Image (tube, rainbow, N blue to C red; front, side, top):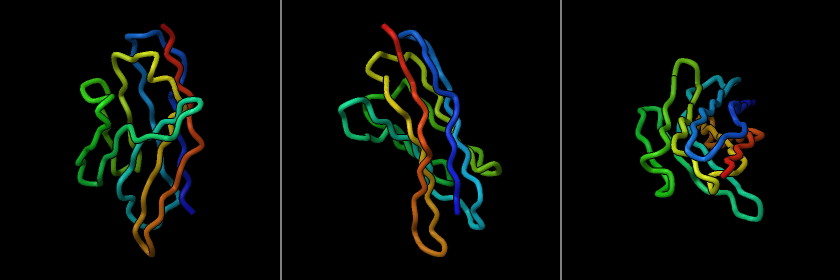
Length: 118
């Protein structure tokens, strides 16, 4: 069973920065795509950014140019550097990790709160 754990959330003023980390552990096989999603109160969970094992990245339009996703494959860890934060970035941020052997499966973390004050 794969465990996914996020860290690094908190309270920051608008214009500030935060760095989130997410570690996936317990997999006997390689971790595939890892991603960050977020869910604001009263809204559906939405994609923030994803990164493949080969470091191909994908970003939501709302965070392009402000957020950077990266990963350390040796540690099965993904990071989300968030700069120029806005109040509308306030949400619970969730990390997920995909495995493909023996069958495709996605594992989610518990989430970490990010609050951006105006």
